[in-house]
Image (cartoon, rainbow, N blue to C red; front, side, top):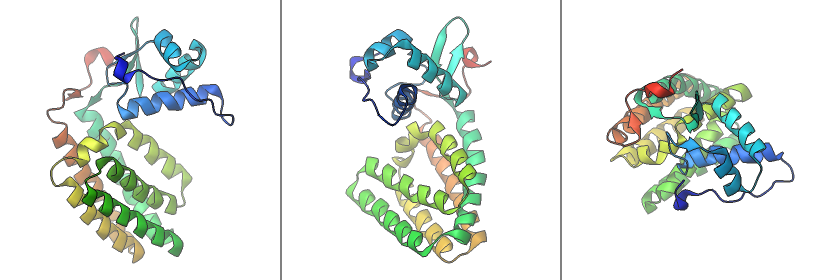
Length: 239
Protein backbone atom coordinates (compact mmCIF):
# COMPACT_ATOMS: atom_id res chain seq x y z
CA UNK A 1 0.00 0.00 0.00
CA UNK A 2 1.40 3.41 -1.01
CA UNK A 3 2.30 5.73 1.84
CA UNK A 4 -0.08 8.45 0.63
CA UNK A 5 -2.96 6.01 0.82
CA UNK A 6 -1.93 4.26 4.01
CA UNK A 7 -4.78 3.85 6.46
CA UNK A 8 -4.39 5.55 9.81
CA UNK A 9 -5.14 4.10 13.26
CA UNK A 10 -8.89 4.01 13.85
CA UNK A 11 -10.65 5.96 16.57
CA UNK A 12 -12.61 3.69 18.84
CA UNK A 13 -16.33 4.35 19.16
CA UNK A 14 -17.65 3.56 22.64
CA UNK A 15 -21.08 2.82 21.16
CA UNK A 16 -19.93 0.36 18.47
CA UNK A 17 -18.10 -2.98 18.57
CA UNK A 18 -14.55 -2.82 17.24
CA UNK A 19 -15.39 -5.14 14.33
CA UNK A 20 -18.09 -2.70 13.16
CA UNK A 21 -15.73 0.28 13.35
CA UNK A 22 -13.09 -1.63 11.34
CA UNK A 23 -15.68 -2.71 8.78
CA UNK A 24 -17.01 0.83 8.29
CA UNK A 25 -13.47 2.23 8.04
CA UNK A 26 -12.45 -0.27 5.35
CA UNK A 27 -15.68 0.18 3.42
CA UNK A 28 -15.22 3.95 3.46
CA UNK A 29 -11.63 3.53 2.27
CA UNK A 30 -12.88 1.49 -0.70
CA UNK A 31 -15.64 3.98 -1.52
CA UNK A 32 -13.22 6.93 -1.25
CA UNK A 33 -10.64 5.17 -3.43
CA UNK A 34 -7.94 4.84 -0.78
CA UNK A 35 -8.16 1.12 -1.45
CA UNK A 36 -8.26 0.68 -5.21
CA UNK A 37 -10.19 -1.88 -7.30
CA UNK A 38 -8.02 -4.96 -7.70
CA UNK A 39 -5.83 -4.10 -4.72
CA UNK A 40 -4.97 -7.00 -2.44
CA UNK A 41 -6.02 -6.64 1.19
CA UNK A 42 -3.21 -7.84 3.42
CA UNK A 43 -4.51 -8.61 6.91
CA UNK A 44 -1.17 -8.06 8.64
CA UNK A 45 -0.57 -4.70 6.95
CA UNK A 46 -4.12 -3.47 7.53
CA UNK A 47 -4.00 -4.51 11.19
CA UNK A 48 -0.71 -2.65 11.64
CA UNK A 49 -1.95 0.47 9.86
CA UNK A 50 -5.21 0.60 11.82
CA UNK A 51 -3.73 -0.35 15.18
CA UNK A 52 -5.89 -3.42 15.74
CA UNK A 53 -5.46 -7.19 15.78
CA UNK A 54 -6.03 -9.36 12.71
CA UNK A 55 -9.31 -10.78 14.03
CA UNK A 56 -11.54 -7.70 13.41
CA UNK A 57 -9.78 -7.19 10.07
CA UNK A 58 -10.62 -10.75 9.05
CA UNK A 59 -14.25 -10.34 10.19
CA UNK A 60 -14.57 -7.04 8.31
CA UNK A 61 -13.19 -8.55 5.11
CA UNK A 62 -15.73 -11.38 5.29
CA UNK A 63 -18.56 -8.88 5.69
CA UNK A 64 -17.20 -6.75 2.84
CA UNK A 65 -17.22 -9.85 0.67
CA UNK A 66 -20.92 -10.42 1.44
CA UNK A 67 -21.68 -6.84 0.40
CA UNK A 68 -19.73 -7.12 -2.83
CA UNK A 69 -16.87 -4.77 -1.96
CA UNK A 70 -14.31 -7.56 -1.68
CA UNK A 71 -13.78 -10.82 -3.53
CA UNK A 72 -11.88 -13.84 -2.27
CA UNK A 73 -9.59 -15.45 -4.83
CA UNK A 74 -8.72 -19.09 -4.04
CA UNK A 75 -5.10 -19.52 -2.95
CA UNK A 76 -4.45 -15.81 -3.43
CA UNK A 77 -6.44 -13.92 -0.82
CA UNK A 78 -8.82 -10.97 -0.60
CA UNK A 79 -8.99 -8.22 -3.21
CA UNK A 80 -11.04 -5.05 -3.59
CA UNK A 81 -13.72 -5.85 -6.16
CA UNK A 82 -13.15 -4.60 -9.67
CA UNK A 83 -15.86 -2.48 -11.26
CA UNK A 84 -16.83 -3.33 -14.82
CA UNK A 85 -19.19 -1.83 -17.38
CA UNK A 86 -21.56 -4.72 -16.77
CA UNK A 87 -21.44 -4.19 -12.99
CA UNK A 88 -22.45 -0.55 -13.41
CA UNK A 89 -25.19 -1.39 -15.91
CA UNK A 90 -26.60 -4.04 -13.57
CA UNK A 91 -26.59 -1.66 -10.58
CA UNK A 92 -28.25 1.17 -12.49
CA UNK A 93 -30.85 -1.15 -13.97
CA UNK A 94 -32.05 -2.04 -10.47
CA UNK A 95 -31.62 1.50 -9.13
CA UNK A 96 -33.77 3.00 -11.88
CA UNK A 97 -36.68 0.81 -10.79
CA UNK A 98 -36.16 1.28 -7.05
CA UNK A 99 -35.58 5.04 -7.15
CA UNK A 100 -38.67 5.39 -9.30
CA UNK A 101 -40.63 3.55 -6.63
CA UNK A 102 -39.10 5.68 -3.87
CA UNK A 103 -39.95 8.93 -5.66
CA UNK A 104 -43.54 7.82 -6.22
CA UNK A 105 -43.96 6.89 -2.57
CA UNK A 106 -42.35 10.17 -1.51
CA UNK A 107 -44.80 12.14 -3.65
CA UNK A 108 -47.58 10.37 -1.78
CA UNK A 109 -46.14 10.43 1.75
CA UNK A 110 -43.74 13.37 2.13
CA UNK A 111 -44.59 15.94 4.81
CA UNK A 112 -44.68 19.71 4.35
CA UNK A 113 -41.66 20.04 6.62
CA UNK A 114 -39.73 17.55 4.50
CA UNK A 115 -40.69 19.43 1.35
CA UNK A 116 -39.16 22.58 2.80
CA UNK A 117 -36.03 20.66 3.72
CA UNK A 118 -35.87 19.13 0.23
CA UNK A 119 -36.02 22.63 -1.24
CA UNK A 120 -33.08 23.64 0.97
CA UNK A 121 -31.04 20.67 -0.20
CA UNK A 122 -31.82 21.57 -3.80
CA UNK A 123 -30.57 25.09 -3.12
CA UNK A 124 -27.37 23.69 -1.55
CA UNK A 125 -26.65 21.62 -4.67
CA UNK A 126 -27.12 24.73 -6.81
CA UNK A 127 -24.90 26.94 -4.65
CA UNK A 128 -22.12 24.34 -4.46
CA UNK A 129 -22.30 23.86 -8.22
CA UNK A 130 -21.94 27.62 -8.76
CA UNK A 131 -18.92 27.60 -6.43
CA UNK A 132 -17.39 24.74 -8.40
CA UNK A 133 -16.98 22.63 -5.26
CA UNK A 134 -17.46 19.13 -6.67
CA UNK A 135 -17.06 17.36 -3.33
CA UNK A 136 -19.83 19.45 -1.77
CA UNK A 137 -21.98 18.98 -4.88
CA UNK A 138 -21.74 15.22 -4.34
CA UNK A 139 -22.54 15.60 -0.63
CA UNK A 140 -25.55 17.88 -1.13
CA UNK A 141 -26.80 15.75 -4.03
CA UNK A 142 -26.66 12.74 -1.72
CA UNK A 143 -28.63 14.64 0.96
CA UNK A 144 -31.29 15.54 -1.61
CA UNK A 145 -31.78 11.92 -2.62
CA UNK A 146 -31.54 10.61 0.94
CA UNK A 147 -34.50 12.76 1.98
CA UNK A 148 -36.57 11.41 -0.91
CA UNK A 149 -35.73 7.87 0.17
CA UNK A 150 -36.67 8.60 3.77
CA UNK A 151 -39.93 10.22 2.66
CA UNK A 152 -40.92 6.94 1.01
CA UNK A 153 -41.52 5.60 4.54
CA UNK A 154 -40.20 2.18 3.49
CA UNK A 155 -37.10 1.22 5.46
CA UNK A 156 -36.42 -1.93 3.44
CA UNK A 157 -36.47 0.02 0.19
CA UNK A 158 -34.13 2.63 1.66
CA UNK A 159 -31.61 0.01 2.79
CA UNK A 160 -31.55 -1.74 -0.58
CA UNK A 161 -30.98 1.56 -2.42
CA UNK A 162 -28.18 2.52 -0.02
CA UNK A 163 -26.42 -0.80 -0.60
CA UNK A 164 -26.67 -0.46 -4.36
CA UNK A 165 -25.50 3.15 -4.34
CA UNK A 166 -22.44 2.32 -2.29
CA UNK A 167 -21.27 -0.20 -4.90
CA UNK A 168 -20.54 2.68 -7.30
CA UNK A 169 -20.13 5.58 -4.84
CA UNK A 170 -16.38 5.67 -5.54
CA UNK A 171 -17.11 6.92 -9.07
CA UNK A 172 -19.75 9.58 -8.33
CA UNK A 173 -17.33 12.50 -8.47
CA UNK A 174 -16.03 11.25 -11.80
CA UNK A 175 -19.57 11.03 -13.13
CA UNK A 176 -20.61 14.51 -11.98
CA UNK A 177 -17.42 15.98 -13.43
CA UNK A 178 -18.52 14.84 -16.91
CA UNK A 179 -19.15 17.96 -19.07
CA UNK A 180 -22.71 19.21 -18.68
CA UNK A 181 -23.75 16.61 -16.10
CA UNK A 182 -24.05 18.97 -13.13
CA UNK A 183 -26.26 21.38 -15.08
CA UNK A 184 -28.36 18.46 -16.27
CA UNK A 185 -28.61 17.14 -12.71
CA UNK A 186 -29.82 20.50 -11.38
CA UNK A 187 -32.52 20.62 -14.04
CA UNK A 188 -33.59 17.05 -13.28
CA UNK A 189 -33.66 17.74 -9.54
CA UNK A 190 -35.82 20.81 -10.05
CA UNK A 191 -38.39 18.90 -12.10
CA UNK A 192 -38.39 16.02 -9.63
CA UNK A 193 -38.91 18.48 -6.78
CA UNK A 194 -41.92 19.97 -8.61
CA UNK A 195 -43.49 16.58 -9.19
CA UNK A 196 -43.05 15.48 -5.58
CA UNK A 197 -44.31 18.77 -4.12
CA UNK A 198 -47.28 18.58 -6.52
CA UNK A 199 -48.06 15.06 -5.29
CA UNK A 200 -47.80 13.82 -8.89
CA UNK A 201 -46.88 10.18 -8.26
CA UNK A 202 -46.69 9.09 -11.89
CA UNK A 203 -44.56 12.04 -12.99
CA UNK A 204 -42.26 11.67 -9.96
CA UNK A 205 -41.66 8.03 -10.85
CA UNK A 206 -40.94 8.80 -14.50
CA UNK A 207 -38.56 11.66 -13.66
CA UNK A 208 -36.66 9.65 -11.04
CA UNK A 209 -36.18 6.79 -13.48
CA UNK A 210 -34.96 9.12 -16.23
CA UNK A 211 -32.60 10.82 -13.77
CA UNK A 212 -30.94 7.51 -12.91
CA UNK A 213 -30.75 6.48 -16.56
CA UNK A 214 -29.01 9.76 -17.42
CA UNK A 215 -26.65 9.31 -14.48
CA UNK A 216 -25.69 5.89 -15.86
CA UNK A 217 -24.93 7.33 -19.30
CA UNK A 218 -22.74 10.07 -17.79
CA UNK A 219 -20.88 7.64 -15.56
CA UNK A 220 -20.15 5.21 -18.37
CA UNK A 221 -18.95 8.03 -20.62
CA UNK A 222 -16.79 9.53 -17.87
CA UNK A 223 -15.22 6.15 -17.11
CA UNK A 224 -14.76 5.04 -20.70
CA UNK A 225 -11.02 5.69 -20.65
CA UNK A 226 -10.56 5.22 -16.90
CA UNK A 227 -7.60 2.87 -16.23
CA UNK A 228 -9.52 0.96 -13.52
CA UNK A 229 -12.67 0.53 -15.60
CA UNK A 230 -13.25 -2.82 -17.33
CA UNK A 231 -15.82 -4.01 -19.85
CA UNK A 232 -16.25 -7.28 -17.96
CA UNK A 233 -15.09 -8.54 -14.55
CA UNK A 234 -11.60 -10.12 -14.85
CA UNK A 235 -11.67 -13.91 -15.20
CA UNK A 236 -9.52 -14.45 -12.13
CA UNK A 237 -12.18 -12.65 -10.04
CA UNK A 238 -15.11 -14.73 -11.26
CA UNK A 239 -16.35 -17.68 -9.30
